[in-house]
Structure formats: C-alpha cells, structure tokens
Length: 79
Image (cartoon, rainbow, N blue to C red; front, side, top):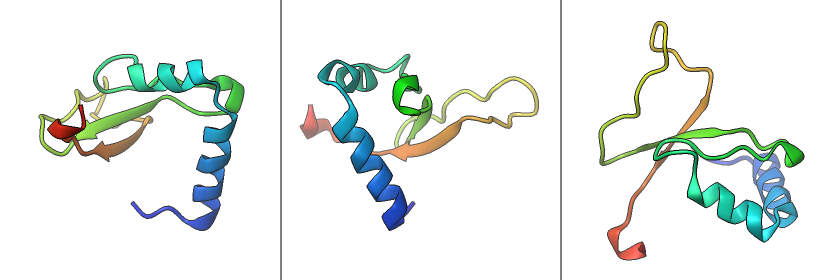
C-alpha cells in the first residue's frame, strides 16, 4: 500500500505527538495480531498480518472484519 502525501503527513504528525510511553504501548500490542489504540490522537487499533506466518483468525460472522488490516514483514536480524 502506497501512502499518499496526505496520509504520510498524517502519520508523521501523529508519530510526533505520541509520548514515549504510547510508542512503547503501540509496539507491545494487545496480542500478536493487534496493536493498541491511542484514542487521544484518534489512532485506531490495527490488525496486522504476517507475510510469512499463518493468517490472523477471522472475526465472528461471515469472516469479514471491520478492523483495518495491513501486512507486516518480519526480519529475524532486526531483533
């Protein structure tokens, strides 16, 4: 997914507004598939999926989720 200039500007402004604690909170995640939301800044909870692991569990119902989902690449040498 390519970020438009407006999206990139929004993301960069939100990153600047995050406190150190909120940044750490986002990185820790609710679980392996979901980030924490930051309601103060209007940042929703995100569902991520790995390009290398099994897909995340589907939500209840017809398998359609209302959550935002985005792929994530895992790099073993980044840890």
